[in-house]
Length: 478
Image 1 (cartoon, rainbow, N blue to C red):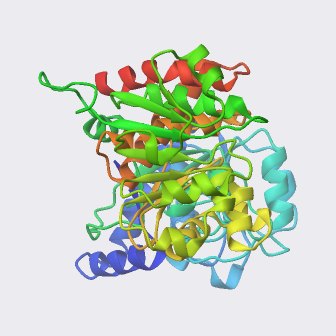
Image 2: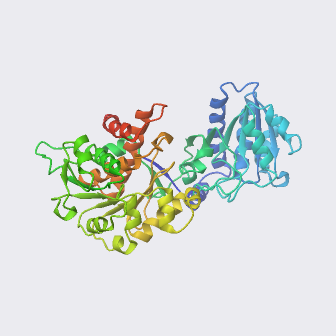
Image 3: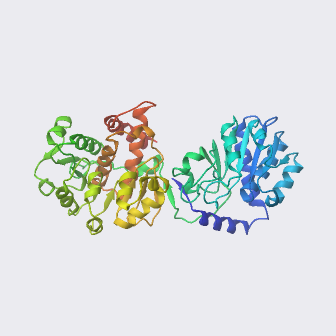
């Protein structure tokens, strides 16, 4: 499992470590790892041209010391100082001793245009807002150049703690981060600016509870249900799907498709699209008598394609089993009714639905995903899976670590994909997983299935559903 920690936690860990080390030793550790990553990116250091973009903070010092190491290996290194009077004195001296040269911003564009590698040390993890106006032309020149752009700790102009980008930021090909991942390296829109991310261990001692968690194959494999010798279809869990309408029968079919592949032993469908469901999936247990009369289930999925069927949503919310609410169900489920539930609840909005629930504009959700998923979880007292280019899963209340899904692909932005995800997550709920675990594992498998199905080409939601089995096997086999 990859973890990420907020800015204040990282700073406290750095202070504690610096108190036990000789002065400057921690920065030298970071610079050594940074220089090694730059050397790997260059391939051949001797004779290469490196430009350092140096701000006034410790990131600028890291860049200067790393530049000195590269200069000693034969690179031609030039440092562009954005704040000459506040540049790190020790790093500047080390660069000059190694044969590097120092320049101001005048003529910097020409240096950047001729560089093989540009090292972004403008702003550190404490930076908020976008780049200052004097740094913007340098960022633009770096992005236009043929150089590999490497960010020190995180790209300048992004918010390390939230993943927000409030203004102009520098887009990197590689980010070399120290000690731990920061939330901004895992959450869009900031993640888009980071490129590949390389973590350098500098010996930080961090608390056991991170701010973010990113599951990996082994973590998901431990969560997935495995039938035992004595299992039957009922012991494995039965998931109920209340979805679809006369206008949207396909939503029911796709939610059932996801549910059938999610580990539960049986799927009960309730709604007006029974004929479409049974025609596609004859193994489904179909009823038209409403959720109360569907038979025993261990979890419900409600809402995909449901239209204005508020009565069915209310009936499902009254059930004393875990419930996943998606799509139209999110519009029809009142916050007090959700908060009053004793059994676990998982909401699965996309950004537009989350915006409607919080009474804000969609772009506000997309620009501040971490805050949005926590606010929703707190307001509704439910676990929340916020879908999007970065899918986040928060526990009920939003106080614990937020899970960030690393497996998504833009090809999943296709009609019906979310219905498949809802069925899959609901099936995992019925199999006994906690809401956060069901949402996280479902998002992981769904993302992998989308990747496998697409393989670089457009796919439909049914292709994604059919790819879940392959994704499941990939996870459990490691």
